[in-house]
Length: 138
Image (cartoon, rainbow, N blue to C red; front, side):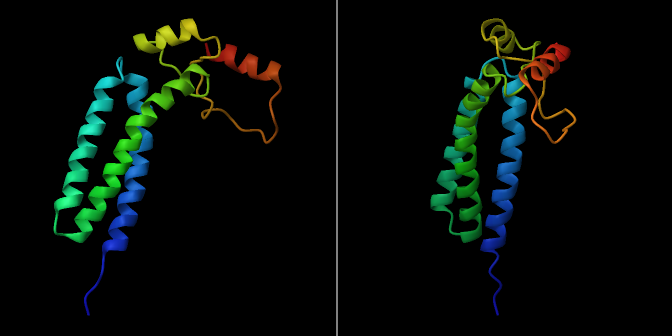
């Protein structure tokens, strides 16, 4: 009996691709002064992995390469969506990054507060409470 590991390889590639992609998008967008360099890098690696996926004879390697290619391609797009979240105040801005310093100056909703690092209380915050939380983060 031969064991088929394609499903397990696909599951691990999907989990780790999404996990590492999520973390790297947040970190790279926060630290990079220019988003075009990491975007081109993500797209180049995605194209290489897609090429490997099309032409490798190993089915497991083809599946893993294809999943990671699509994940990296979407992460390239997600870098710019993350920047929009920073502009809207939904993700924290890094005041030491020149690109984020411009965002903080130009967009009134942008903040350095990380909304994920606060104590949840189980009830909605009023506008005044949100404003005081935001002011306390500056």
